[in-house]
Amino acid sequence: MASHRKPKQRSLTSSTARAAALLALTGAASTTLLGGTGHAENRLTPAQVRAKIDGYQREAEEATERYNGAKEKADKAAEALEALRDQAARRTTRLNTARNALGAFATAQYRSGTIAPALQLALSSSPDQYLQRASLAERAGSRQAALIAAIGRQERKLRQVRGEAADRLAALRASRTAAARHKRTVQRKLAAADRLLDRLTLEQRQRLTAARGGDETGAADALAPGAGRAARAVSYVYAALGKPYVWGATGPHGYDCSGLTQAAWRAAGVSLPRTTYTQINAGRRVTRDQLAPGDLVFFYSGVSHVGLYIGGGRMIHAPRPGAPVRMASVADMPFAGAARPA
Image 1 (cartoon, rainbow, N blue to C red):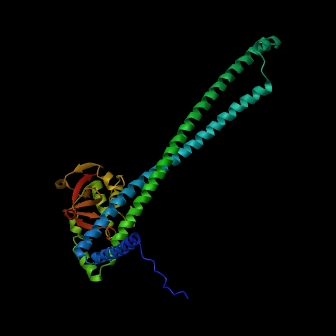
Image 2: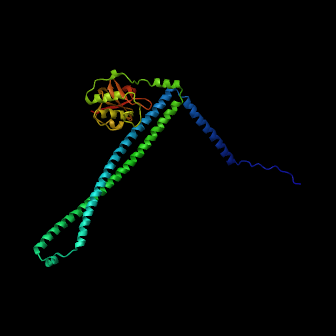
Image 3: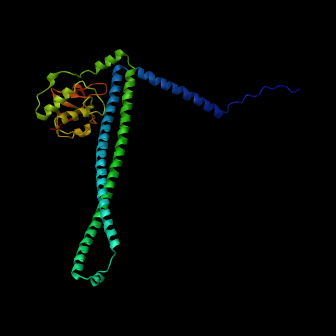
């Protein structure tokens, strides 16, 4: 009788054992890192939270200005494309009219046939009548030649217009793609800031708001006397106090920073470009000690924020998402330059 043997258990090979150990270590490390990240964020002080939120919102504002620039390019390309399409349609109509006229000439010649001029003179009972007809035919031939030349010009111009329209369409698509990319960046940065805020208690949020002080919604005594268009621009931003920050908006119900300054000067009869980095080159550059009400004041090294100076060292600006249009000290942010539009 055969003896019963216990089935042999397969032993792990050395390579299999190493792989299993590596997986176990990797899993443990991932758990530690993921858990550690969450705990680290939970341990941030209100000041650190403020710094991180400010960083996210500043990055969002930079992306907003890039979005504004791309959208402005897209809008201009769309307008130019529409104008070129209208021009192409008109030229196509003129070209078809010229071709129809040329076709009528050809049909008339086909129906009448062609007879050699010498034979026509020989067969004609009236040489004078023949010469009159020949003169008319010559003029008709000249008109026909001119019509053919006009058709050639129309065709060349139509090809040129269609080529320009194709270029505008490509530019439009590229600008819309860029705008969509910048929009996603804005949304990611703002969502990151919101997640940090959600980690705070109500008391911590209140302390954070207090730490961000220095902004005001009143203080009408800050308004220094202005003149002409600058005074109208200042009056506009005063009327906008308390309206919400809305990224990409130019009013009247909400604004981003450059949208507010553009709208203010538009109300004063001056057309400003859309973005901070183009507005700084609008008008005459002025130094900080030369500031006057109505001047545009810019901040940060990337010139990503702008406000409208109202005098007394203060400005009115659309500061950031969640903060309405308000007054602030020009000294609250890193000063980058100033420009006087009018």
